[in-house]
Length: 359
Ligand code: SAH
Image (cartoon, rainbow, N blue to C red; front, side, top):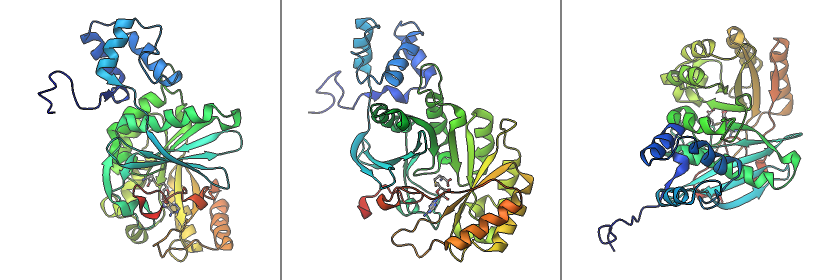
């Protein structure tokens, strides 16, 4: 049957209401003669009460519910699998409605959980050490798909116990968030909405970037989230080799953008540095990192390289990692060595993939 034969009935899946910004929802309601305050009510049902149907929204008049049901759906991601690591990390594999896959990782901390979410299917940045880079860029996630990772996993964790409370969100999964700027910012608007959204504090949301310089200022000006920058090298020739984006936006420009980044007075940028054996892990590298960061308000996260199939890179020995850390500490930096969780289930940094290749 063709679309015309069906008359007014559409074969397209209903628009996911999570794709609408608050403004768009307001104008849709207005166009249909419905008071704007209903938007808050509807959003609360979706995000705070985790409603799956408009039918469930019992304090909204029946005719409005019917109208909403005819125009929109409230989608969930299709949960294909959840793998649990020995350390308690859980990797969710979600199937999107167009058949693509995305991974989201729930990481246990002492008294809460951190959720590592994806912003794109695949990635265009081509970083030499990252598995996601091998997929190439497939597509941007929509705002609704970004929000859904948080909404759907929250529902899972809420039902278990308090220590599982989901409190931090990091955009450190698949993709380059600043290359999908519009959708990421639209998603943040709901994730950090303290009234009718998902109610995450902006202090507990971190956007991590490979260094898309022109978008850095926008993020600082338009949001209050924390910024993490994947540095991985303190000189242009090493960084060019590891991260092709450095050829376009070299360290001088990146550091300038970091110095100008608009953030709260006591806030600091997190600089991530993946330590790779024989590539960027020598005492000289540590010293030049200390020098490079002198002019910025930053702290350092060292991530020992997570090995993955097909990569010749190796993780440095523990003594080398400690020595690297020591040099930064002596230079008065706050340094955390991030021992990636979930390695046994390929859920660690740089081990996520949109392609079923290694499963
Ligand atoms: N595109 C964004 C976010 C995704 S990568 C960014 O570049 O920041 C998240 C972090 O994982 C980055 O700091 C990256 O340097 C790190 N990473 C990627 N592959 C890794 C690997 N194999 N081992 C350890 N860390 C890795």
